[in-house]
Image 1 (cartoon, rainbow, N blue to C red):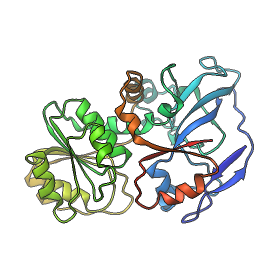
Image 2 (image 1 turned 60 degrees about the vertical axis):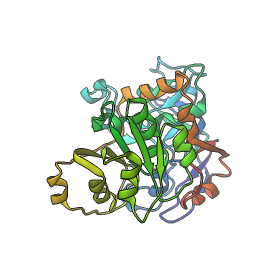
Image 3 (image 1 turned 180 degrees about the vertical axis):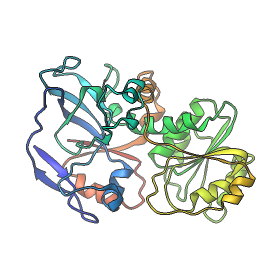
Length: 333
């Protein structure tokens, strides 16, 4: 099959013809219909912390059609349309039974979406209803990531929410925060590209003011935030968020930052700020994201700005490493 593979750090992806995946007894093979290009995919090709190896097939936000099942697989059959939960798990341990698959001892990140076919396990698949498209199936993962962060934050109805970063995760966070009853949601970024998209997904305001990020956000919110969601992952934003959150408020980290960061712990302590980190999502949150799409919510679909072919992937992937007006780009292998 044709695949786009990792060639090395700071090196463009490249095409390879690799063997078609063959399922073991308890596995299945999916013909990839849509796969999202995630910001973490971009980081994986630039940062050794992710541990990518030459020949790896990236792509963990994907959905497709089941084309082959192993001898012991009974829950799925060829022709089923599924979204793949990209968290490798055994499916039987206590963590898996609870839906907290990120704590499974067999945990790993499922890739493979930048190819014509991918192998996975039945416990990582969720069937798509007839009114949910493959494109919808490919955006469930970022929606679930954002939902997990909102749930962990303890945000309550009527609170003021500040979202730092207008990428897909930041915009999805704004969607869930508003859906779950935030009185006011403001998204802050250093560029204006996603203003209209943010507003269409539930944000009440959009702030771009690098010279005065703290004051501009406070003016837009009408006060300091009850909850700040850091959805960028660059050093310095935790310290900024401490200035932006109210006394006894919460900062929730969703941005992936692999570099050391520093902040004034006294400033945080003196305000009794809660700093919470968020890792992946639960199966229940993945299903809740699917349910939001099945219910007809149009807002999350606004994340998708382009759909490209596998042939276009290496070039577009490199272009996305620079700030563009794109949001979520899907690959249609």
